[in-house]
Structures are given as structure tokens and as C-alpha cells.
Length: 162
Image (cartoon, rainbow, N blue to C red; front, side):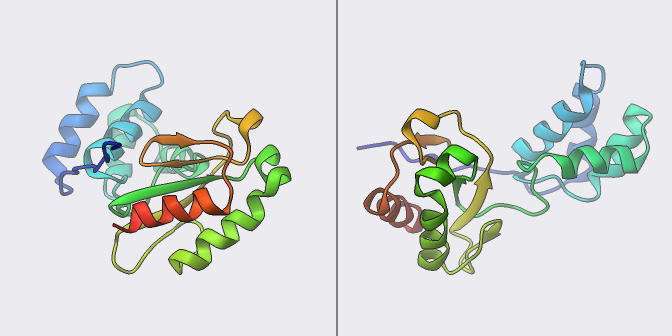
């Protein structure tokens, strides 16, 4: 039986956010490091954290917001209990990824980039998992899955809905 990864996130707290920012502020590439650390702690990057990061790094809010919005992995709100990422890169599209994405959207009742009403599953696009030789591919809660077909996708969706 495969272990299921279930993330445990802290609720947003400005004091805890400030601690995380201070902990990473002197690292090289601190903007990305801090945004990742905030998302790891809270499950998303709270809007209130953007000006805090900007102030700590002596950057404008626009610069931090630009980094935040440029990278698809950063979330504006908490993800569902499980995160199913479908590769949308060219190799996966050429191998049938578009049809599988449409199937996942239909099965879950949400479009890419959204979370089911019961907060169980967030369906996200990802732009290359590095599994081009086994395209199309997906990732469920950090577990990579290659050679995705309808049967495997349906199994991933069912697993995520539990």
C-alpha cells in the first residue's frame, strides 16, 4: 500500500510569517526562498505577506508580486487536501494530455487551477515534470506518475477524492 501524503499547514499568522521572512531574508535569491517557505508553512502565500516580503528585502510590492505571479506553483489561497498536477508541456500534450486534462476536469467538476467544492482536490496545470519519455504525466501529492492514460487518471482522481 502506498503511503498517502497529507499536508498539514499552519493557519496564516502575521507573526509567524515575519519569522519565516526573517529566517530567509539574507539568503541568495531570498524572494523565491521566502515565497516557497511561506507556502510550505501556510499552504499558500497570503496576500498580506507580499508587502512584508517587500519591506524585508527592500523591494517594491510590485517586484515581489511580479515574482509571485510569474511562477505557477505559488498559490493565492490554500490548496485542497490533495493536489493533482497534470503536465501541460508540449510532449504531454502531443501524447494525449489535452484529452486527459479535459477528463480530469469533468470527473472533478472543476477547471485547471481550481479546487473542488469539498476542498478535497486541487487540480493544477504544471509545465513539465521532466517525464517527457513517459508522457503524458501527472503528480499526485508529490508522487510522479508517467504513462498516464484514462485508466490511470481515473485511479488518481479516485485516490484523491478519498
